[in-house]
Image (tube, rainbow, N blue to C red; front, side, top):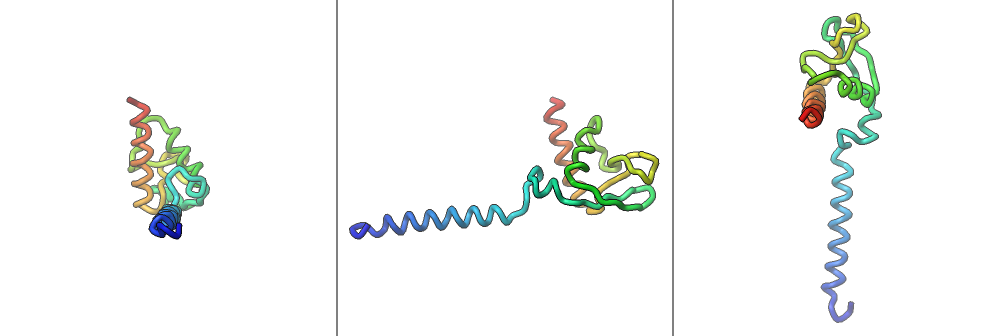
Length: 112
């Protein structure tokens, strides 16, 4: 190492780059199917009555996944406030659209 210090610097730089990559990757948010994300609590709103309730994201997405066919973004999961009609959607519209698009893409893969 004393004769070729650049090797030590290269190894140190590589280790630093890997550590930075791991740190950045872990701070960019949970992936859609991570345990952290699926155990979050989300707020659902009935589009007919405006009533809201909270639910575990994993259970919410499971309900969407087990619904026959593709998810209609204008509908949602069965709402207890609308006599079981599929009117329950995420309050956050961006999250709702992302979730519907992701689940519909998964369903399309298995339909083919």
